[in-house]
Figure 1 (cartoon, chains in turn orange, green):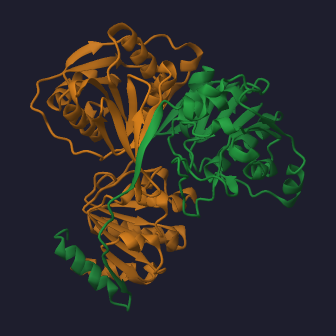
Figure 2: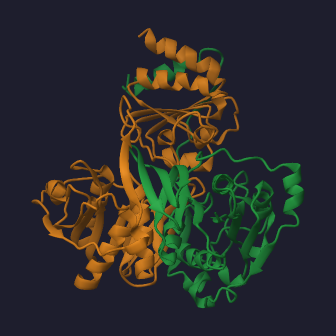
Figure 3: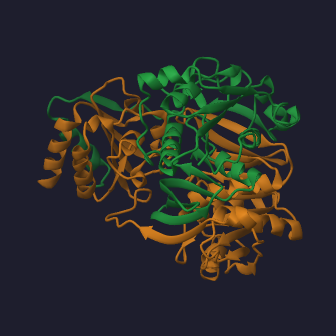
Length: 322
Length: 259
């Protein structure tokens, strides 16, 4: 039995659909008969083509929320749509800021659980099962829903490879956003975009990350310099983000970004569970750590037991002279 | 201003985690305050201080009437705690946990603000904050990296993928805070001594007016099918730096044709 209908949360910025949405649409096509997207934002019409090309036959548009929070408003709109047109078998959200909010609010509206941090989802014996990595990705937990439909999942970015289906544009259907009352009183009054140069952390082919082993914030310069030389993106462990050396947007790991670059270079990172979850899927891992027992060395393709303060300057010099 | 902070007491993340035969996380050793929650406790203390009055109440759910982590937060300056501890809670999922915490929060007299971390360090579903807000019908702002309160309105910088949003929200409300929103204080000796005599109101599921079937294994509308080891990465080459290891890295990158 396949699932007859799946809804996928479509997220976009200025008419560009986020890669996670396209990954989920591709997976949904494999699992379900009908795949429909749902979306909040002013650019629903604009993205209907891309969504259709990845398998969505329809996009349910909640429209511009006028600064209202996506989580509560989108969940209210979905609950109302389910009330009028019936529930899909499965609702897919990405582990993103708005995705988590909306999935959690919807779970309360419908009194249904959310299975979180999924890296795979499948249909087994008529119900949906989700695979979630735990303990730094060393073990995989498979969980099944037992509460009927809709089954709500939160899936981690980069869990699937996006592929086009060759479908035409998705049909745009407006869905009503019910008045959320006091619970929907939060308002976005301004948006700040932080300027970054170079490739994005979660899209770069090479990622160079630094951790506590760098010793002090100023030494993070070496990470940025190396990343620039390799045309990659600089990343960080949670330890140095919490310490305030670099912004949260640099964080790779369970609470930060999931990266799967061609090469991941970890410098002065011991490899806490929380970090490994976010980078274990990298194709090649180079780790530099002075502690031969550091967990990161156990998953490195090339592990250097050494002092980052000695190895990095020489590596930078060697690359500059090429 | 009265603030409720949800805090979790978790196994020390420095120790390797382990599962019980029923696939729940082993929590029978000493539990500590989840570091992620220390930011919310500190932020709450600072907001109460800035408001010139009020207090911080902790709300927690833990097995075996565990209070070690609560004492840490009380030592930081929280006034009191409500601890829900009950055998019936074993196996609770995120929604079940949110139902318990929401009921416990409702026991606090007129809180202006409910504060949480964005996710716990052991379970990390990241859904509990919004589920609590949903159950209490509160507005919410998640992933706060900066918080101010003026004239009964929250002004929050909310983390986004591209930077941050400035969000305003009337009180009462729920806010989840990221690490780094403030620098948590270390409890002083005086604080640690004072914490020993601060009230911890221990309640059961029945005290909260919840049916035992709504929480724990029975309430979790999901079941674990299996837990299996993930495929391991092939072990690579480990070398000791003799002053020339950088050549090895260049060679490795060359081999991958990424230079």
